Length: 88
Image (cartoon, rainbow, N blue to C red; front, side, top):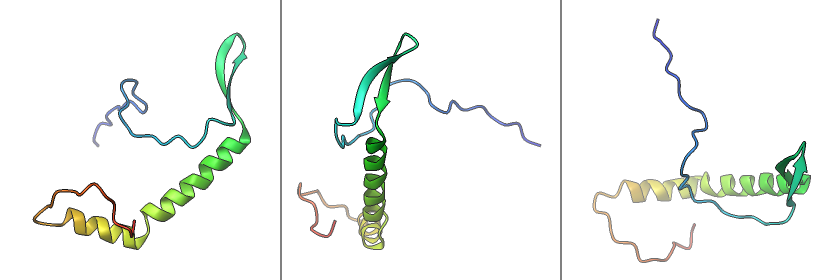
């Protein structure tokens, strides 16, 4: 039987992931038990869920994935032109 290795689930540190701000609405600072907290209205979670479905429908559609496969599988990569294909 092999030994399990411990991995930090949410390591603290610099986060260089790109994020997209949907809105500044529905979020506020508040206090609870003497501590500062972030209050998130239910509408924010609804908006987040809707956008997640839109992103998944776009990014995981077969046409988009085939386009990525063609780009990544190209034996002679070409320089980018700075514009996106109209099919994305």
